[in-house]
Amino acid sequence: MKFPTRILMAGLLVLAGAFSGPAPVSAETIAMIGTGNVGGALGPQFAKLGHDIIYGSREPGRQDVQELVARTSGNAVAMLPAEAAAAAGIVVIAVKWDAVEVAVMSLGDLSGKIILDPTNAVRRDPDGIRHHAVETSTAEFIQNLAPHAMVVKAFNTLSSETMADPSLAGGPVTIPIAGNDPEAKAVVAGLVTGIGFEVVDMGTIGAAHAIEQMLIVRGNAGVLGAPFNYYFRPLPESP
Ligand SMILES: NC(=O)c1ccc[n+]([C@@H]2O[C@H](COP(=O)([O-])OP(=O)(O)OC[C@H]3O[C@@H](n4cnc5c(N)ncnc54)[C@H](OP(=O)(O)O)[C@@H]3O)[C@@H](O)[C@H]2O)c1
Image (cartoon, rainbow, N blue to C red; front, top):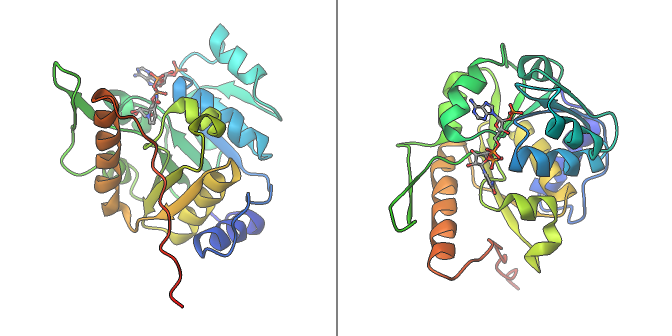
């Protein structure tokens, strides 16, 4: 799939460090699979950038799903997950880890599409301390399920409340991303910066393991009474 030149160029400039402001608006259709905390935060945010949001819900007529559609600007609609994915160039897998395999396999052929993966696989001890619950990463798991799609890990290291309102963080927040396809990462970088976050490219999909561990570190800091958001301050340039 070819992506609109403007959204791609904006993202490439972001990753090249040549663009510090929000990415310019250009239309893309984004399927939001899952209508919970993350779907309900990112859908309205991406819509504000001018993208068309299709919520992929198992029950598109449900009252809370229709309320989410109503508070999403532009041409938002809700339909069944496979219909939403078929109509979109970008597919966000906003479901809990234990539902990821069933959800992705229900979407049909995802070849050529960007899959944005914010998922986390977390196991908790009785005292609330978290552990990463997969050997590699959920992003690599999804890439294996959809080998001809372009999976990009992003948005897993912050809360859905901060996704919905970046000002809650009280300062800049960095979102690490990873994936094998540079153009897909550029598109996702444009979404990240477009809604008000900073982006750092951590490399290929294998880096998702470390990015998912970052969520574990952040979650455990919160449990231990020292909650934080990630912000990467670049080194000063050498003279
Ligand atoms: N919550 C956060 O702050 C946060 C932050 C970063 C990353 N994440 C990650 O993002 C993912 C989504 O988290 P969330 O908090 O948005 O979850 P959530 O509130 O539970 O929403 C998940 C959605 O998945 C859909 N779904 C599809 N198949 C499902 C199934 N078999 N069983 C249950 N739900 C199913 C449901 O939408 P329909 O009923 O409409 O189909 C549901 O609303 C998770 O992997 C989580 O680790 C969460």
